Length: 244
Image (cartoon, rainbow, N blue to C red; front, side, top):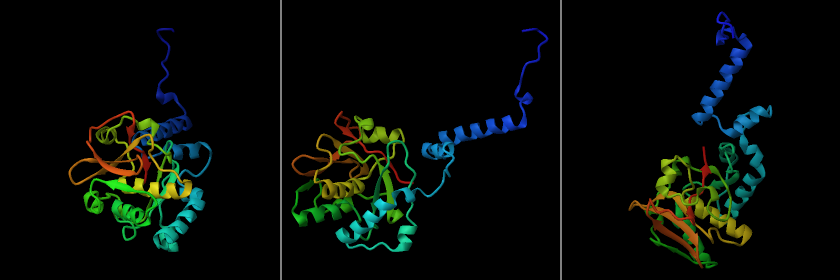
């Protein structure tokens, strides 16, 4: 290159190219700050509306949950409640829908365990029989009836095996809470006649009143136990969730 050659700088770019670069930088910033999901970016690339209400894609499952809530729990969703339900866009492998009924129907894990005991279809053993709702508060209950997406596998997420409660939280991994996992167990067992976590233990994103992480697994019966927040094992792991 000649010593007198003019270096090309950003100022020599045409206005249209500068605008495109600005959009790319803004998109990368939004992805970094999680203001834009990969699903929304994919929709943009496919020339689809990125913020279209994702509940449309789950309309059949939402109708199934409506019927199930009424038949199983005696709760009839109004059109207004269904219309106001926010279903998050899928993120990563979290594409299985779960809808939690309001607190008046299921306030916490004890409501689900009590139903299983009354039905006597299978047994459940917990670290605080009859007191789980008080011991394990659901920090998402302020949302009323709400939806989340998760992987939907029988065992804890492969990608999160050996993650303790503390590691998941430290890395900002959003995970299923105890009430959500037990509700998924109830739905899954009635539909497929098999229990969750026969090979693993799910470390939920719930802490009990004593500061322990709540873990759930199947071994002849459903177990709801306390785990140390640093407990990690190749057969333990959380389940990632997207709920907002």
